[in-house]
Length: 104
Image 1: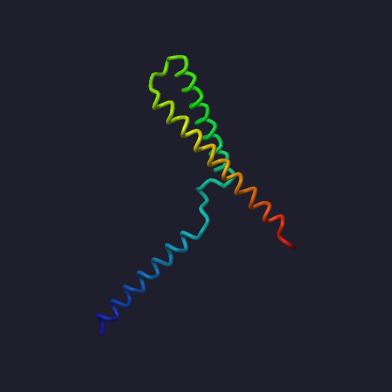
Image 2: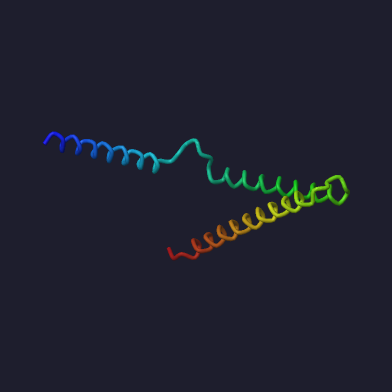
């Protein structure tokens, strides 16, 4: 009988630990950046990727950059980042319009 009680205690303790972990996961983190800061960081990252791609393209045209693959990859990264930013903007605008059209 004590063996069953011991197993029940272990199961209960495991269950309590998993509940505590779940609760911690639901609590807002104070060390993570806010949404607006993430947007600003993303836009800065996109701007630097576009500037890098433009600089590499110019360097290739002038002849100082010989690696065409590096230039093309930088341009693709810049293009994908711009498309992602555009899609995020479109989704946010669509959500805003949906909220504004809700009846009060």
